[in-house]
Amino acid sequence: GESVGLHLPTLSVQEGDNSIINCAYSNSASDYFIWYKQESGKGPQFIIDIRSNMDKRQGQRVTVLLNKTVKHLSLQIAATQPGDSAVYFCAPEALNFGKGTSLLVTP
Amino acid sequence: NAGVTQTPKFRILKIGQSMTLQCTQDMNHNYMYWYRQDPGMGLKLIYYSVGAGITDKGEVPNGYNVSRSTTEDFPLRLELAAPSQTSVYFCASLGDTEAFFGQGTRLTVV
Image (cartoon, rainbow over all chains, first blue to last red; front, top):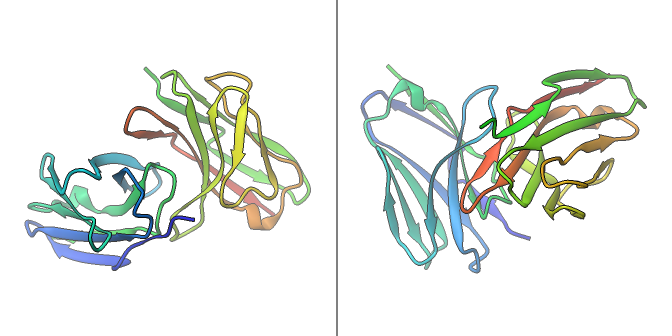
């Protein structure tokens, strides 16, 4: 089946800095990818998605980059805020979630 | 618009007891999913459904059963609870591009 993994299980950044969370995937047939944010004690929430025919997509303070050649995704968060502290997952077609990366924003 | 609603929020079961975790969505989504999430881990897919009357196993289906008699409801059944089923359970439904999650059911089996 699909293998989705994350390079860094934890990431600590200072408030105001930019954050980059990485994700590798194995199934080259995946058509689109979704990034989710999960705050402590809550269910995952959609952040941004990207289709396989794109290499970049921007949202509000977030940018997702897709490199199909090396099967790699990244989520960039600009000017990270304390409210961004959460676990972040990437998932192809909402079915297969990796372990997640825990983002901790320190003041 | 309530989205995805799960009940109960918390439950403690004794080994061997049974229970049903309820999940309902009001968005008329065909695709629905059940996941479990163990501490510090990602979500593992238990069962999913692509529409009323159709269900399929996910990555970790053993010890669970589901049914999908209506588009709105997708209950998850545990027949003989075991300590290994202690986890947080999330139900989700899939729209055009985004999955909507319930708030989770925290289950402890003792």
